[in-house]
Image (spheres, rainbow, N blue to C red):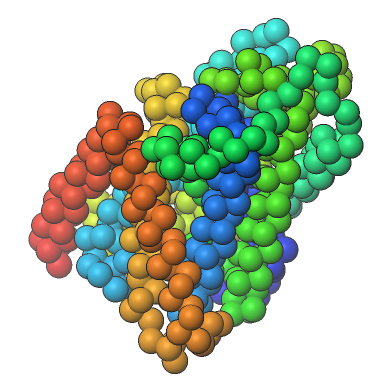
Length: 433
């Protein structure tokens, strides 16, 4: 029954999951951090182009992996089947605690931040309430989940398109802009800060692989999975480059540097104080789709993990409509704990560090696929994609660790906790058998 085509999604819903998972917190909150060290427009645009290329190369690899390893599970399946079950366990542990729960927390916090522009402190309580309500909406059926998610994704896409048209078309504000086209980019791209800025960018592209996690719920997966991954990633890359150009065009540096809600400042300059707040509202609304996408995909990955590991069996249960409600609310609870336990930037950095590390491990599994096992890319030139991705990942991870040791060590501490749990889980499973 659960595998019937009536209970599966098409490429449009899969694409909407990719787009909604990617466009969210990162692009509307990271420019202020990047401008603390990188101020040349060419450098900023290059950061987002590199991020888009890496995401696209990653989608090519995940499309092959998603088709070869059929069913839900994503990284857990790839790493367990190729390297060792412990790595599959660790990536699922990280996904449960950080990979999907943390972006939900960050998106909800960003909603509160943008809505606070209405002279009311929405705070953590509002962020927690939003996560809880979205979780409930995803708990009824796949049909209801699809309609809810697609509706907010449509709001997201229309908002992005209108924002880009308005931002490109409107004149620059009288107070100035942050556009800088001199030759300083040649020095900036060689700075460690450029690599550190890339960690913010790669986080913003997180979600390019989201549809591969629910391959078991996609109709005609061989055709629709690559379509969803590639269309979603290309759309987001173009949008990200243009959104960053708009933010640089419509605000001077002193309005943007070090701030999280950078688009709120840009909106006021573009439309005035009152009308500019409409941008805050739409940024908040489009973040609902981000929260929905991560809870949807994360719960499926957690369920696949829970079915095979003793400690987490209780999270594998579906409701009568085959929705993994326990897994959904597990991510909800963890996201709430994250909100209550750290600052926005701290959460951001250790999340990005861990996601980059485990995405790299998963990408490396494509080297285990033989030529005749690949369904899309038959040429050996295919290996350019994972090789470039992995080289950039090493570069990003090294400089992130050097410049943000505290956050990186928090991330590694979470991995160490997962290793301990794996040992406990393995012993308990042997006793049961």
